[in-house]
Length: 427
Image: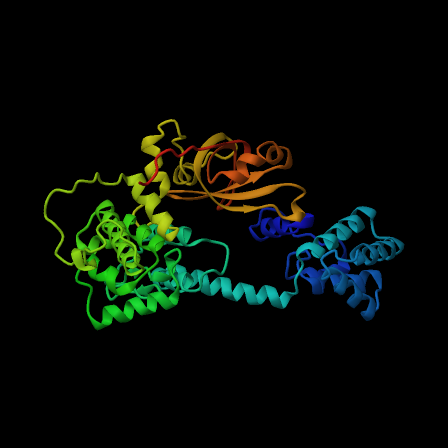
């Protein structure tokens, strides 16, 4: 955080450095935050007690802090605060530090009440995630889009913590994701790309009237978009009809072709096979050997991501490692278990978060995800500018840098990055 406030606070809370008050008058103001100003109210009290601001002037300072640099008011009131603190005989080093901290508040500062409210939400969320991970996952998925992490990251994390996540199913899925009687999470139609709730509700109503007997029955009664049907086919959603993905895709394409032929015939055109009825697929699937090659593991996961933006069958890195033997063998799990603090390491994974806050002086932050968990990345300005094009335009990266461990936090100070090229495609 700007002004270096949060790190001293955490170090003091862990007992790694002594709690010191820069001035005796600050002791009652900063006691609860171990001598480090964290809240807007504390800044206002510092201004009143040490700089002899009036209540009105302190409120103007608060307003300037909340203006997010829109008018430059923070500099005007900050300079006035500095002048009065210096006039009172306070050391220039202390005054300069207070001024920088107040400038930092203009970027992120918030009142203590907001902090308490957020802490309560964070505590409740952590409790649910630890003790009721399946219910927590269902609640978050059904509330999307809502925050930091995408569906695939939420599902991957839940699976790593023992939650059984079931794929979308024409036989069982509702619009919302749901908890099954066995405690598993069944994904709902809401995660399907291009699927709206109206279409999903109509599909569920048709299924409630009469279960789907076959893929042909499903196609003729649901009338989903062609792109959605093709994505569902390749993602193995029609496994319940005893069909492999490419066989299901073939039937979906054939159905669309025959439907188009019938529509054309009704308009006076004479396309090939226009006279054949659309019910030609109503018979049970053939038991003969499939003519299509099965999808590879990588293609399975790619198809899942194309359809849902996630996969219940594995993480993309699990599929890439066997095909790309030159990828670094170090994983997020190994780094956290062994601890290579200060060592130069390389790691590969999927970038799930990118941030470049204005308070970071050009530093960029990112989170890399592999099949075992997360690693936070820090790109200082020169490195970021050198690799900016690769960073923004590629999802899978190989990152080399120095490992930095601070308590439970594990970061890589990046020195170089390279894109991981993915060749195999679903088809």
